[in-house]
Image 1 (cartoon, rainbow, N blue to C red):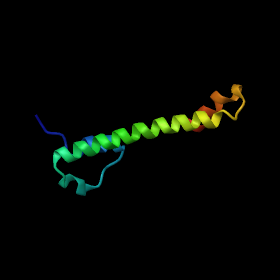
Image 2 (tube, rainbow, N blue to C red):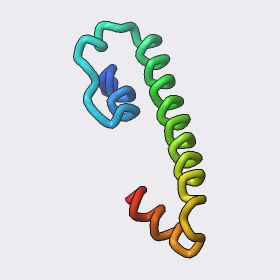
Image 3 (cartoon, rainbow, N blue to C red):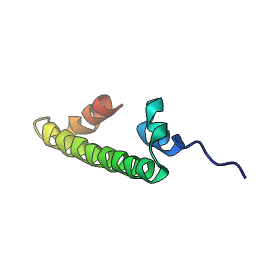
Image 4 (cartoon, one colour):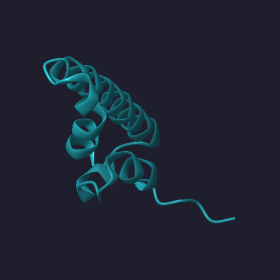
Length: 73
């Protein structure tokens, strides 16, 4: 059984290749960093959703779904 690359989980969490220098960190530190990145992304997503809802309150109700789609893709 092959071991996954030490930065594979972090790369997945970031959505991009992390700096190669991070490979020098021990596995426990990489796991902790990966968890921190995932938690930060979750919090940012929730904050974005909340701010979008707040912003859309100024728009007429029938236009809100269309505006949400335009802004969020």
